[in-house]
Amino acid sequence: MEATTLSPFALLAALFILVLAAFVGYEVVSKVPTMLHTPLMSGANAVHGVIVVGAMLVAATAEGPLRIVLALVGVTLGTINVVGGFVVTDRMLEMFRRRAPGGRD
Image (cartoon, rainbow, N blue to C red; front, side, top):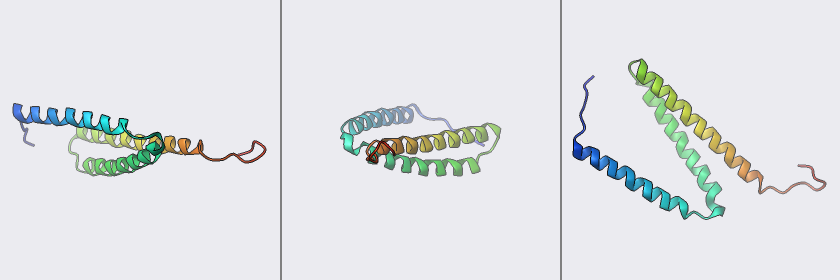
């Protein structure tokens, strides 16, 4: 395997894109109305599911023990994120359901 070096210009450009994406993401998310938060989170969970599939593909091509362990950690954390997101979304939707008469659910 061949090591690649990143030029200072490319590193600065990548850092600039990261900071710009963070600011744009914050502005977009902060402007979401409360009523649209649950559908937005459900959509984000679906996107995270695609990311987990990509992480599994990367894990399948990993060479060496360090890369395999890092890929496994990535898949595990991504899966926890997806499952936790759907659990939170389900709990939020539970708040909007009407309760049965007599105090029973």
